[in-house]
Length: 261
Image (cartoon, rainbow, N blue to C red; front, side):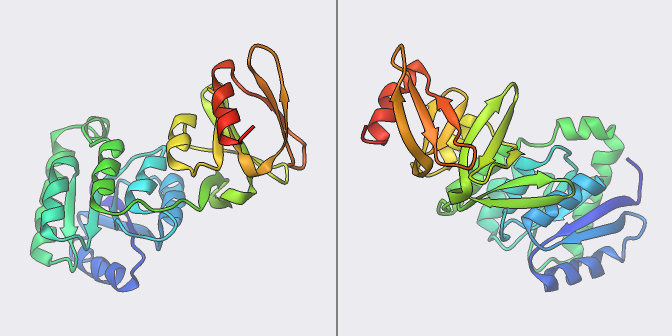
């Protein structure tokens, strides 16, 4: 990684982006702004396609918040959070991040961030810096402790350079194939997701029933349940393909209980 660092700004407040651009423009030797995004979904797409060295990232944004966006990245740049959280909240995160800037961002505080980034770059290679970057799982847990849990209404999937949001009612089931988890819609489309079955089970409402180690079904899309062998059940869905899934032998009670079978 060499200076100036390719930089992307991600914030849903246009005034915040304008102010940050103005402040960063005074440090052309440190940053070269190559893109902007106004929500987490746009941020996810532009980071994956442009692969910047560093991003300045808001936390509270529509579609995906900052931590949710990070959890979906396959490429991780250096991250500086720009947030409106108060100083107490900032201190809670300081041990788990490159740096945090409290809005409205002040030039003097930004200068300290720049020095911190320079130190990181100078101390080692980019790969070494990334290996020392805090786990996004830890960041997500911190955020969850600070705010009410939000109800999920859709799942984001990547299609080319775009991020598509699939409403939960349009999802028939999730199924793991090898190391990947795919989402199947009621109209027969199939998309790769960035989640595991376990994480989906925790995040999704109870209308989504885990019927095996590798499958999670939208109970509102079940048209028929047929007794199988060894305590298993055949689940028939009312999607376009009339999909048929077999429950695991240890999930029989869960299927019967959740669906009042």
